[in-house]
Amino acid sequence: MDPLTPRWPDGQLDRYLTLAGAMVDLTAGPGDYATVKCLGCRHTDVIRYHSGPRGAASNARLGRGRAYDHASRCRTIAPPDGDAPSTT
Image 1 (cartoon, rainbow, N blue to C red):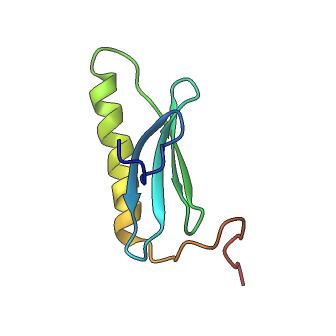
Image 2 (image 1 turned 120 degrees about the vertical axis):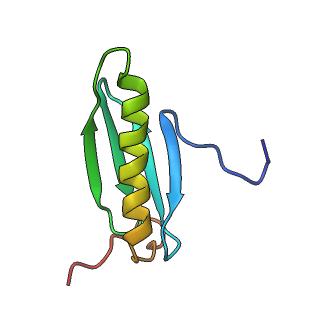
């Protein structure tokens, strides 16, 4: 691992970059759920995973698809650490 690249948190599956440079994280858990969270606009999408033999592949496609879709459309610039985006 590159020492300049920060480690992803536990449960982090993927990370996407928005058009404006914010990140969209896909995180596993808890249980049968995964979360897509945009660190720019703070959009959050909770996905309930399917169980069974085909579940893992289907879930990966679903979560990655939603994260990628949001990242490809979001134009919110990531706020400085600790600041929430303006709602006005």
